[in-house]
Length: 284
Image (cartoon, rainbow, N blue to C red; front, top):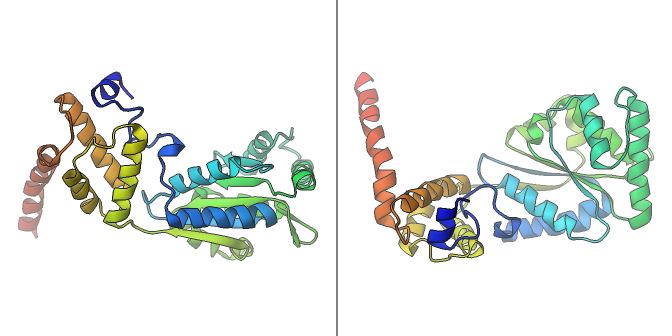
């Protein structure tokens, strides 16, 4: 965050940025219930869980909140997979790095055995399963997903030794319906499908972020209502618009963001798009 935003508004961080501290992320009752199920299900018994939803509805936020929650639990080993597009060799390289196992990617059998031995040792020492979180899981190769399924269980598939949380958009459930991935899809223990938010839910999220950033009165209540009503139920749309307003307010040295600023900034975009819509109508 630049110094002007900090000095002008007394902010600890930009509340509308994607990269806010995890404390600024709101765990809604739906997410809190999901975290409870992950803690008492996936961590104890292993297996697969899935979070899905459209763009901007909070999948990555849920992933961050899940990671923070699990990292705060005793004896839970949590790792976040960073490159879902990996081929098999890179998949093993990253897993080895995440779980502290030196692997030789050209020898998949040795890597397979060593990782499973690491997972089993963790369980024997703590009874809690290691947890792997994969964001953008819809990008994973089906061969890698199948390998992950085989890697995560022992004793003829009767004992799960790893918990896996797959986070992805609407393409992920479709991918898991493919014939070669049906065995993995059938192992999903816990699911969370994120839907567009209501204006009240968006307002709660916005209020929480402003309070965490140190300036709960940064926006007028009227502007908050306007933004939440026009965000189409999408937190990302809400935060992007609010971020534009914050920078416009800082440029004009305004003490507070209000509806007048919203009309000045967003009204220009609406007016500029009107001639294009009219021209398109005439062409029809």
